[in-house]
Structures are given as C-alpha cells and as structure tokens.
Length: 207
Image 1 (spheres, one colour):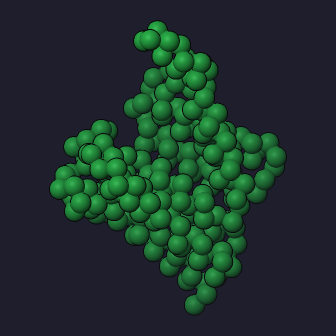
Image 2 (tube, helix red, strand yellow):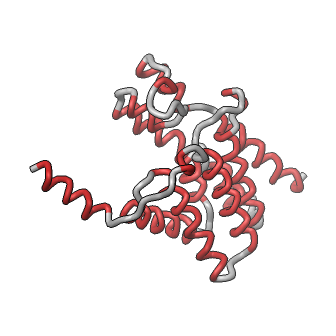
Image 3 (tube, rainbow, N blue to C red):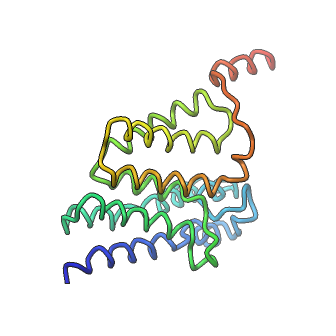
C-alpha cells in the first residue's frame, strides 16, 4: 500500500490544482468571466483586472494554496524522498496548466508554482527564485523574461553548486512549463536596464 502513496499524492495534487478557483471566484463574487480581461488566462491576476481587489487577493491565496497541501503531506507525513516530493509538486503545477476542467487550457500557473516552492522542504530554492525574480524586476524590461530569469537563474546556480539531480530536474520542468506558457511573449528580445532609474527619469520628465 505504501508504494501507492506517491501516486495517490501526485494524482490528488493534479486534480486539486486543476480546480480553477480564480475563475470560480470571479463568477461568484464579481459576476464576470475573468478570461475576458487582460491576457485571457483564468488566473488571479485577471481577477484583479476584473475590478476586485479583495476578490483578487482571495483568488491569489486560493491559487497558491493549491500547490501546498499534498507537497507538505509528501515530506512531512509520509516521509517521501525529495525527488518524489518534487514529482508531486510538478504534478500540482501541471494540473493547473492542463486543467481537464478547462479543456486542458489552464493558466500560466505562477501562483501554484509559488505555492509548491514554498511547500518544498528545500527552502533555499524558493529563496533563490525570489532573489532572481527581484533581480529580474530591477534589470529586465519584459514581464515574461523576468519570470524566465527567476526560474533559469536558480537552475544555473543549483547546477553550478552540484545539487541533487532531482532538484535540477524539478527546476528544469518548471522552466519548461514557464517558457511554454509565455512562448508568445518570449519571441520579443528582452530589454535590459536599471528599471528604478528609468522609472525615476520618466517621472522627472512628466513633472
């Protein structure tokens, strides 16, 4: 029976993440289809765009929460190996990306990915992603490239420090998903600069 635990956790993580909570919250609390806003994705960002700050915060919490429970159960309750726990986390991300409830057309799933990273026992991976995302925000112009930088940077760091191959495979899987979901935006060559300085200059010109 214990051999089935990883499979059950992965399947459960997939189906929980497949639940489009943001879409449901938008319909229930705002009376709107959030896919008609912004980039057309069924994610929390479009709940904010649809006009609901409180609803957006609720949707963001719900989407992040989808990536947490079964990952924590995997390493805290069942004591599964690190690679198996990461496979459960990747299943959660894929459930959001390819939701059967949305005809396999899910969102970009950044919130779910964030939840998975926070739930992993390897806390430093989440910290690395946060650091590289911050660097991306400071120096990279395009949103899609910021996200890719936030995932690719930790992958390179983990490879350079000779970390577990399971960690590398997990981050590579996350990178592939992120790149696939942002493929149209990534066709644009990224711009670089010190964004806070550019922002201050723009403010001065307006003044």
